Length: 258
Image (tube, rainbow, N blue to C red; front, side, top):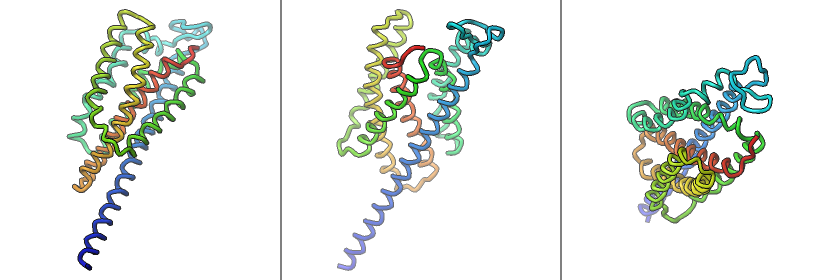
C-alpha cells in the first residue's frame, strides 16, 4: 500500500508540474504574441504619420482633400519599393524555420519582433484608408473573437487536428483568389474572400492553440528549455498571423473609409 501511495503521489506531482509548465508556456506564447502585435501597431501608426502631411510645401503627392504624401510616403506606397515592403515579411516567414533550427531562443524572439516591425511597415497604409475609429473598433472585435476561439481550442476535449489540412488548403485558395483579383479588381470577389478569410483564420486560431498545447505536452518531459523557448516564439508567430489576418479581413468588411 505504501508503495502504491508513493507511486500515486509521484504521478500526481509529475502531472501537476506538467500542468504548471503548460500554463507558463501558454502565458509566454500569448505575451510574446501580444508584444508582437503592439510592435506592429506602433510601427504602422508611426510610419503612417511620417508618410503623410497637411503641409503642401512638403508634399510629394496628394491623396485627399488637404492630405498629402511626403517623399517617404510616395516611396513606400507609390514606387516599386512597395512590392519589397509587401513581400519582405513573407520571405521572413519562410526563413523562420531555418532560424528556429540554428539560432538561440533569444535570437529567434528578436527575429519575430523584427518581423512584426516589418508587418507594421507593410500595413501602415490602413491609417490612410480607414478611419482611426473603425481600425480600433475592428481591433477590439478581433481581440474578443480571438480570445474566445483560442480559449475553446485550449480547453476543448475534441481532437481538431484533422482541421489542419482543410484550413491550409483554404489559405492557399485565398491566396490564389487574391492574386487573381489583383488583375480583376472585383469588389464582390474581395468581399467574398474577406468573409472566407475570417472563417478560415478563426478555425486556424482554435487549431493552432490546440496544436501548441499538444506539442508542449509531447515534448515537456525532455526538459529541453531552449527548445521550449523557441517553441513558445513559434507558437506566438502562428497565433500572431491568425490574429492579424482575421483583423485585416474584418477591417475590409467592417472598416469605414476616411
